[in-house]
Length: 148
Image 1 (cartoon, helix red, strand yellow):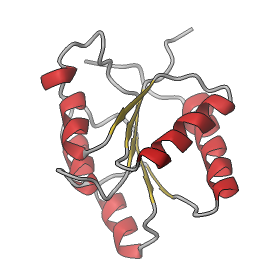
Image 2 (cartoon, one colour):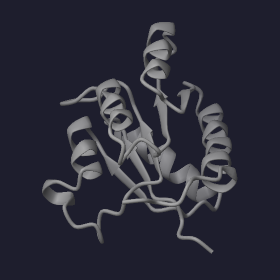
Image 3 (tube, helix red, strand yellow):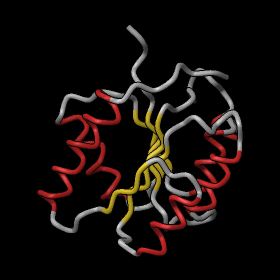
Image 4 (cartoon, helix red, strand yellow):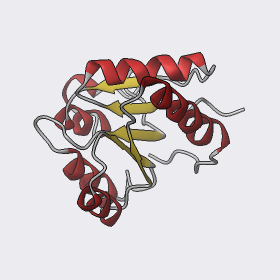
């Protein structure tokens, strides 16, 4: 059996990050979840820079969950950087945002997002979205083996 997929959650809203974490745990999805709150920290993690330089404590994620509106480096720019790097390209990136803007969706998919999810305002709906998200991306989806 392979190691569980590490999830990198890039979310500046602590309450939203906690909802994601709690709902994955509530659905018995115990994948390691690394949370960073801005785009610069996400890139530091992915490139193992600064406080994330140790590969043992900062394992390569198998999934990035990315908000669009982030401090320091915007989520779309983080997405573009990931998808432009041959070493990171295969990591699925799921946009999880409050924006239902057609323009944002177009930009995200043009930058090769693997999925675009709009956070429901209604808590029970958000919980349901996280349940189906978790089962699909962490239990059902078949990612390629990690290559570093």
